[in-house]
Length: 219
Image (cartoon, rainbow, N blue to C red):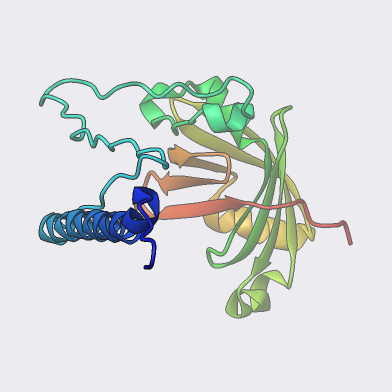
């Protein structure tokens, strides 16, 4: 007679393993099902699912542009005090009515040029004297020569520039000019700046523009 093994642990081992395998399968199936549901929700909402292992990015808040009511001044911009002074100051040119004769006289000092009826180079000095070098046009060179130098006394009164011709060289050319145009000339100062000025003949209203230049080298 064969003795049967009555140890329940030996006979129950296959049954226990079978139940444990089924439980594992059920657990895996449940996890896959949850993941499938989460994936479907993610695709539907088109939003990433936040991971508990990664920090959530903060939401951006976009504010509407600042609205300034009509008739009010815009906010002032604070400029760094360490910036160069030229960037902080915006100089506006003055109108002639705001300039005094003294200011006009000070601004007139320097060397200027004009292409009116030939080339003229006028050097104005602060002591009330001036020198004009005149190179006439080709037609007038037949009478005056290639170059005439005229010494002048000048001043500004009531925004009018007054020139008095004192002497000149060559002497014959100087006498011809003074005989034709006189020794005294008055021109209305229409505008003046650091780079140019414009005067107007009081008789025929002809305007002449002068531009500031670097003094030419003496020849």
